[in-house]
Image (tube, rainbow, N blue to C red; front, side, top):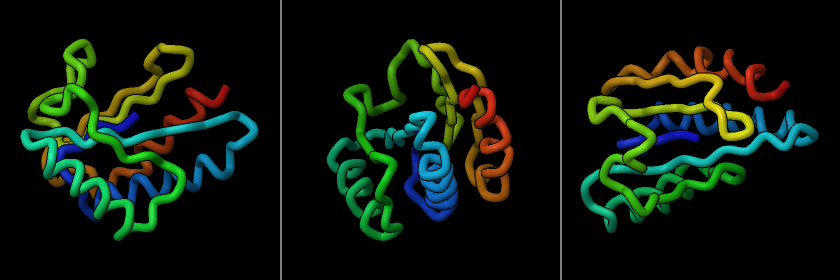
Length: 120
């Protein structure tokens, strides 16, 4: 599960790699989705549609959650994090990555390295 405040090239890079992992792990039923969070629901919904179209996203739903300002309160998403990635299995978080503004670029492999933790 990904929470993102910005639908940009860095997020697209992560989502594209997640899509590849989903394809490669269909037998393990790997799934993911991206929550766009921020202040303006209408703008977030517009950004989600543009992101899907621009980057040709096919396997990862891009959504705007009900609690769109900062995600669900009990998830404790840092307001300073531009992107938060939670990898979980059976409702237990196995890895959590939070990236500040501009930090995701170049660190996608760091997130993907934790995939085996949820594929077991």
